[in-house]
Structures are given as structure tokens and as C-alpha cells.
Image 1 (cartoon, protein in one colour):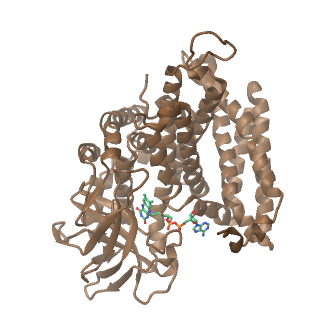
Image 2 (cartoon, protein in one colour):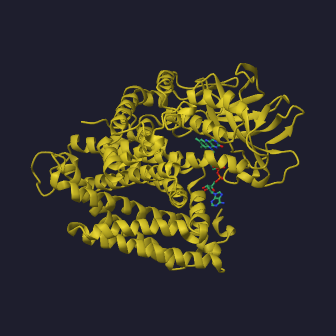
Image 3 (spheres, helix red, strand yellow):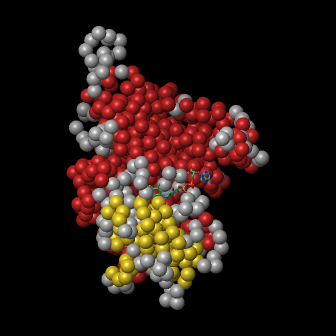
Length: 600
Ligand SMILES: Cc1cc2nc3c(=O)[nH]c(=O)nc-3n(C[C@H](O)[C@H](O)[C@H](O)COP(=O)(O)OP(=O)(O)OC[C@H]3O[C@@H](n4cnc5c(N)ncnc54)[C@H](O)[C@@H]3O)c2cc1C
């Protein structure tokens, strides 16, 4: 019996049987790796997640974070697992050895990350942001900044945070008002405030490094006038010694529905005129610099949704096999059967299995594309992988966070009344996962990114590449007798998506642009539905080949095939209803003025 955090058999199937990640080891960057080292890493990550992260998950939720006089305490039980995570070199395992990393492929790294986030979303969140902050300094920092900040971040002695949001600047990042004034010594004095900053103040690390967006005095309004800064909580001298405490005041933390062990801080900068930051990257290029951090975080957030779904599903299966209620279907009068015997429960479980495994494959595949983008020397190949990552990023973020939450809710339902109670993990999964559709750019913003930018990118080249990838897999599935009708279902879905995309793009060029954009979120969901089907039918093709010589693994492959069939025939067809709703071109939404919403 495996752990109840993630299905490692499924993780291994994706890595070794679907993606053949060992092929990556032929690239010089990954040459020190092999399946053996991958397995050592996965086993060690499982141990850390199961033995250290998971046991303090519920305690962290109950204790929460506390604020007093500007200081924030995180749940005390987090301290030890955080230390072990840093000492184990997990923070930068995917980085190059020149910065202390272990050159681990991104897809492997995410296989581990999925366990950490499933085990403890709040705790793992501190690490995720710290890595991103270090990475952006590695990419844009001066040599001195790298020495002072990057290495202590990668080592986990410092924590990194991302300061974008202000009261008037949430989705509208260009509305940032925090100001920077250049000092004679080249540093900048910061004044302003940020809200909702994850880990903006905490007592886990020696220092906190803020990656901050602000506007240099005199620079234009909007995103074009924003610059990026490194703002340490405690200033650091060129030789790395800690100096004066910066003028950053944490005036409070938020009280949230979930992620209670994660400190969400309200910060004021420069109340005493002494908040000193350093420019990161060129002036007025803050958005480009920050995008590196945001893009990494977006896939990570999709993964968080998937991770919570993965553990919620495993808990549901266990519960459904244990909990007895009513006689088995069609056997009235017999003794109580486990609820998994009831048609509705079974359908719920298969629904959860399909989404969970499809999302897991999608996230790992996206990281695998990133791996090939990193190592391939061929320019066209590099571009191809890059384009795939670009187009898949908003889908990973939005689709996996929405479906991740839905899966957690479904798990509560399978648990009945127990699912609504603290004693069972799944209600925390739902509370913790809800944030994933909101932070890192709400899912509406992801939908606009996909619909307004990514599918049009380079005259649709990336989108066409995605469609072609799906069509190629469906072609293979057609050749597998047992799968052929399901491949036909998938083909229909892909064609419908292709037509819909053309129609919506035409509508945006005409007067119907507002109406077309109102469909951006449902459009992203439709793309996600089809992409998920792609992942599952791809897996079924492999399972169908392997089942003959499965050496005792027959049940796994059989379930894989049945899951793909169920998805293609019972879930995917919902896209036609969604497409029909868009095609109706109904104009009620346009006629619904602001005033009509105000009934009181
Ligand atoms: C727990 C938590 C942790 C967070 N951590 C961080 C952090 O570490 N760093 C940080 O900088 N921020 C952080 N945030 C802030 C988070 O990124 C924002 O909440 C998010 O970007 C949305 O901004 P907002 O809350 O102001 O909502 P708004 O922007 O006001 O959005 C409200 C609603 O309007 C919709 N909307 C807004 N504009 C548009 C548009 N143009 N088109 C379509 N729909 C639109 C949104 O989708 C949403 O449904 C965190 C928030 C929370 C709750």
C-alpha cells in the first residue's frame, strides 16, 4: 500500500512509460542522472513528505499564523521539516551545479514537488516562492546581488517573496503606486504598501528577500513604467554580513479560509523614510523580470491544484472501500456493502481518477517540454518546446486549479458528513486548494492570456503545434482496435475545438469582441477538457501495448484504459454542450447593463 499523498505508480508511469524521461539523461546537462538516481530522489522525497510535511499539516492548519507588533509567527511545527528540506538540497535540486543544484530534470523535480504540496500546501508554498526569487536573481541580478541574495535563498537561509499586489492593483498590475526614488549611491528609497504577500513576514528564516514591483519617480503610468527591485528585510553588506533592519512594517496578516499556516502579510514600506532597495534588471523592465517569477509560479500553482486533487482522490478511494452503507446495488436485503459498490460513488471515483491522472500527466508533460527546451541545441526544436510551454502554462494554471478544487469537493461528497469534518483531511484539501484559482493571476486573467494572446501568438503557430500533437496521438489510438471508437471521440473533440477557435477569433475582429471575450474562461475550460483527453488517450495507447506482458501490473493498465474510455465517452462530450452555448451567440449578456444587476 502506497502513501495517501500521491499515486507513485502513476507518477512512474508518466515519467518512464509515457514520457521516457531517461532519454533526457543523454543530454550533457542531465548526464549524471539515470533511472536509478531518479528513483533515489523520488523515494527520498516521499520519505520527507510522508514523515515530515504531512504530520504537521493539520497542526499547521489549526495553529495558523499569528501577528503581534509587526512580527509574524508561523506554526512552530513547521520549523523542523523546513530545516530538513533545506539541508536536503531540495530548494534548488533542479538548478545547475554552478549554483549548488543537482541538475535534476524539471519533470522529476515536479514529481517530488507534487508530494510536498499534497502533504502540506502552506509549508511547501514558502519554498516555492523562495526558489523563484533566487532564480530571478540568478537571471537578472548583478554578481554582487547573486552573492548576497541568490545563494542564501537557494540554501533556504533566506526566504523569497513576491510583492506585486496593492489594494488598487490586483489583476491590474499596472496600477501599482509603490514609488522608488534613486539615491546618490545607486540604491532606491521605497515608499508605499503591498497587500496579500505570501510569507511577507515570518520567523522561519534569517532574512526575507522581497522581489518588488515599484515605479521609479517620473516613470510613466501603467506596466511600462514599472521596475523590479530586491528589497531585503535585513540589509546585507557586500561581503554578506547582515546590517540594519530595513524600514518595512508588517501591519497585519489576513485571516483566510485555507492555507492557514501561510502568512499572508500587509506591508508598508518607508514609513520612516528609510526603506532601501536595489534595482533588479533594467529600469522600466520590471514586468519582463517579474514574468520569469510569475511563469514559474503559474505552473507551480496548477501543480498545487493537481496535488491536492491527487491526495483527496486517494483518501476518497480508501474511504469508499471502508465505509459501509446500504446493500450493494440490486441486492436489497443483504448485509451492508462498502459504498464503492454504489453506482454514484463509483462514478464519482472514476471522475476523480480521470481528472487527477490527466492533470498529473499535463503538468509533468509541461515540465518535460521545459526540460527539452533547456537542453536541446537545435534552434527550431528549442522554439517548438518553448511555444508548447507558453501555450500550456495558462491551461496548467487555470484548468488544474479549477478541476483540482472540484476534485477536492467531490472527495468531500464521497466522504458524506465525515468529509465536512476536520478529522478527515479532505475538507482542508478543498480549503487549501481554493486559492489556486485566485493567486498568480486569477483564472480569468489566465483565460485572457490564452484567448487574447497565446492562441494568436506567431499567427497561431503554437496552437497549431498543440493541435498537431493531439492529432498524432489520436492517430496512434485509432490503430489500437479496442481504443478506436474512443479515438474517434477525441478526434471529434479536437475538430470541434479547432472550429470554435476560428469562430471566436473571427468574432473578436468584428463588433462582437466584448461577447467573444466573455467566453474566454469557458473557452479555456474547453481547451483544458480536450487537452486532458489527449493525455488520457495517450496513456491508454501505452497501457494497451503493455498489458500483454504486464507481469502482475495488469490491473493498473486495465484501469488506465478504462479511465481513458470513460473520459472520452462520458466526460469529454460535455464540451459539445459548452461549445453549443457559445455558438448560440445569444446577446443577453450584452443587454444586461450594470443597472440591471442592481435590484435593491
Ligand atoms: C492567500 C493569498 C496569497 C497571495 N499571495 C500573493 C503574493 O505572494 N504576492 C502578491 O503580489 N500577491 C499575492 N496575492 C494576491 C493575488 O495575486 C490577488 O488576489 C489576485 O491577483 C487578484 O487580485 P485581487 O484580489 O485584487 O482581485 P481583483 O483583481 O479585484 O479581481 C476580482 C475579480 O475580478 C476579476 N477581474 C479583474 N480584472 C479582470 C479583467 N481584466 N478581466 C476579467 N476579469 C477580471 C478577477 O478574475 C476576479 O474574479 C495573494 C492573495 C491571496 C488571497
